[in-house]
Image (cartoon, rainbow, N blue to C red):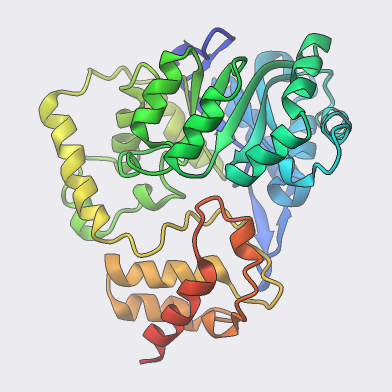
Length: 369
């Protein structure tokens, strides 16, 4: 499998293993319980298959993802990978919380250092927290101490905020951006990716399949795509030399094997005609974008029991398929959009900045007809 250098740092395989969507059981309230043994086995299978980049974070799987990764990386596996995890900025109340949480993460991960450490899901408010608490200085101290090797951030906000963060610290080594062939004008934007690379940052890609949407396209899109839609999506990203690693949240061995097989291929550079085809597919998808939910489940569990991702999925299906298909899913929810009271707790944690409380009454009215 091809390896690419991450900025001026280490090299890693072009396919990385994301640890946010590992095997788990989800109850009717949307609460997830990680299937630990399966997760460990899956991580090791990915590494044995050639993947060298493992990405996790403090909150994933109810704060158990790092535990699973730490256990999986025993028995010599730690030395075979580039390990990335993230600082939960929303939990920082004092400057010293940064280092204490890092210590907790190192203990969970059973390691003495993090290869790539990110400030998690930065946006305008969290960036201000970073500045107010002098977290950037703390990062540099931890890097000097050797507990962090490379400094970076993941991003979820608008383009202007992205450039404030990108240009607001001269020691970024890399960044992690949401990018795929239909999100080119979203969040950091494709131009932001290019500009970050031009400043010397390594580029890690998240949501290459937009929460699985691009892997299972609606019929009208499927008819346009030549061959495997997963390959189609990955190839667009791997075609860009600015991209170091593309993360995929694989939740079973079949997905790992499929994606590894794709990453092991040698692709020709995309032609102008092929790039134009991606634009045509994007144009069709753009007509179906009712709610940009990726089912990350950060909003769950809802304090009032609403299955927020399920309601959005049902609503989106009506655009890509038909109303009856969406209604079948919607009617099967334990508590649908009618249970929303507009507390907006979900909106505070949504990486996509979806106005959930605004959408819910619209969805309820739509399906009540």
